[in-house]
Figure (tube, rainbow, N blue to C red):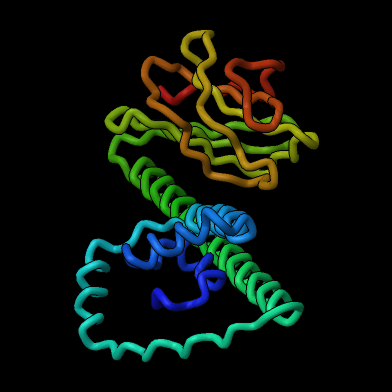
Length: 251
């Protein structure tokens, strides 16, 4: 940018803080006398702010040093030739075309930035889901392999079978169930620790699976058994229906 450039072409550079001090002062003097440029600056500043929010991603710590190091190797382009002043209808058409093109570029960049952030978040969520599933599998395997693991197998209504495994040293319990009927639509099987008649939430079963190995949520503590009820999707803080099954822990 140069001070001698047509001030009407500097709205985008001003909105994105790309002018030096002298250029900024000269343009601000023009801005006071030009309502259309003032309106354009307000619109582009708002668009630039939305773009920054949509594409906000924390950079790597080493990115600044890397950029500064590479700047020394980048050849600067020569300044563009000064635009030929236009007058009348032709000047207004060129200005409107330039403004629409700049707005379209900002909108496209905002869309791409938002898509990139969404994809980044989706990938993070997928990695976190996989990490939690891996941790549950490892905890379940450790419980089943514990030297003091004890098991009890019994029948559930409808011909299903369930095996409860408890380890005192790990203070955890698991349910291995097979042949269970699917719960009604919008419902889920919820597991409970039976603390001598008081039911404590212990996790949910996948409503789409009739065979599952589930690590109960939380420590066994003083529980003497477990129960299964049918609850609304997402579970309940306390049972809202009669137990489908009650299973005592192995002695």
